[in-house]
Image 1: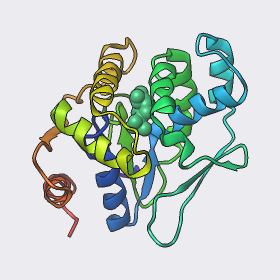
Image 2: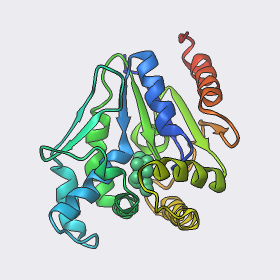
Image 3: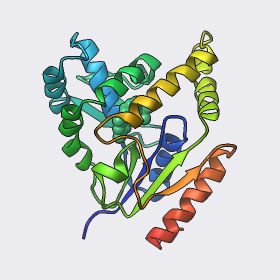
Length: 228
Ligand code: DC
């Protein structure tokens, strides 16, 4: 019997990261943050001074990425190690996010990361967070959810997050960056950001995280028929 997968896709700021982590914790399932893998390729490229035009070197980098996700017992997000160094916070910057979106548009890089992502599918189940979980990586996922929110609300959420760490964040710059990243993610030729045909689309604009969780749980209960 195949291991069940809940695929949660959507653009950044749609709430999918928080929802996926909460869901995984609640079910006691594994969690895949696929965006982190693209961020890690971007970070490794910086570490090794590899240009984002050098497809061959990026492909090799992606195929041999030395990473570890260290799951903590207290329920906090996993620590991410790259080549033995803790990069949990570093890879969350807007710069790395922008680079990640560029490397994610390279088919060879996506292909190199495919098996690594599928290897996360181990018992009792997997909650997979990304852009193409339901369309490409786990097309046979039992549950597929696509979270969206208006671009303004997504920029607001991101602004609030970043403002806590960096007082110099400029809201208008963020709106522009998010729009550029969305466009690149949606228009790329391989695995573009879009809902799978059998995905349930949930618009989270104006909803708090608890309300989003309720809706997501309702979809999971209906599809899996065995969650409390
Ligand atoms: O979810 P995130 O912001 O950490 O993702 C970083 C970038 O990686 C984002 O611009 C799109 C890309 N990505 C992707 O192409 N496919 C995925 N499954 C996850 C992320």
